[in-house]
Image 1 (cartoon, rainbow, N blue to C red):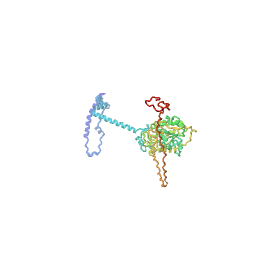
Image 2 (image 1 turned 90 degrees about the vertical axis):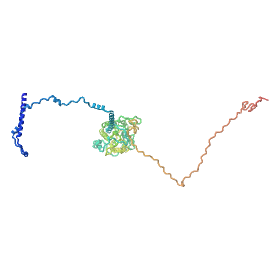
Image 3 (image 1 turned 120 degrees about the vertical axis):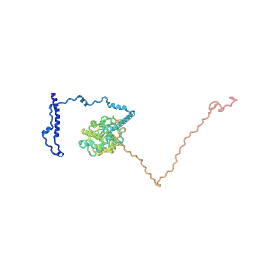
Image 4 (image 1 turned 135 degrees about the horizontal axis):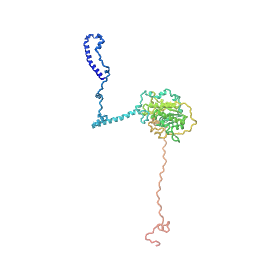
Length: 497
């Protein structure tokens, strides 16, 4: 078989020169055509001539299928990539090698540049993290009246409408029957029959009692208190009793209705966790005194320059949305008095309704929300059992709770009170004295001599004692010797001469 293949190959090689010669002869035999005749059609060439001009060599079919001989292994070796040099240094070795080749000055310069880069990075990274702090963390504690909130909560105009899920939910009417609608003014008596429970803003209601009609009798406001403290903190003190938590205080006070206002100190929670804690507190209050009507108050808005960077309007709206859902779930009522404070153009609180920190209400803010409260009353019957039990007198909240006491703000990050400008009292001007006419002038009375003054007593002069009258001879007074007081002359003998 192999011999036949070799024979066929030799025959094919022998025919190739003959075919080439035939092709050359055919080219010489073609007549030359002038250039003008290029457009004329070519004369038909018979198929036989074409076949003669281009004869195909007969190649045996077996030769077509002949496999190519195997390439030598040397060619395959040439096509393979060259292996990497094992002695070539790696990246780390190159770096350390370069460091070793540095001079002392170059090394010092590199260390200086590296230190500067590290210091700049340590300054920039915390600043960026501070600007991007997510709202809802633990409340900050600094910021004066003129402090400006960081860029993280500076919202452009129009963003409020997109983020105010709470306002949008109320507009749909989904919570009608739960949210209190506008009514006639219920008057001061409605306020006095309501127990207000809450944090520093509720303490502010007590401080502005002349405006709000909230006193110690119908207000429990603890500065810095959060919703999780309602059931655990002994914060209400009555005369002759130890301090008790809020639910027990509700049982003692027996109010007709309760308005709960928490949330300002709870932004470290998620909205879901906040709603869960609120539900626990609500159920504890209901169990302590089930005859009171309960109203949940919306959390007040903040101003655009609020001093607390952890507080933002989108977070407040999410909390309020959870509160209105909870009110509907527990079949209690919801007072949306925060809408009385908002600027419709921005969604933030109007500056005149807040103190300088942007979180606590001013006197004007209290006036506005209590006007809203009286005109959105809860009309219901008094379900309390009669007669009511005697109510002991309230006492100030014990100090040391959350660092502060009732109506005090020394340790609170901000004061719940707005300092009112004090008017300086001027002394009353005395009216000018009228000068009577000369004829009506009173006549001065004649001068009166002062009474005589007794001279001081004078001690009498000392009196000499009387002389001794005893006789020097006999020593008796009177003398018994007949010669009193006369001594015998010297030399005379005693007795008769």
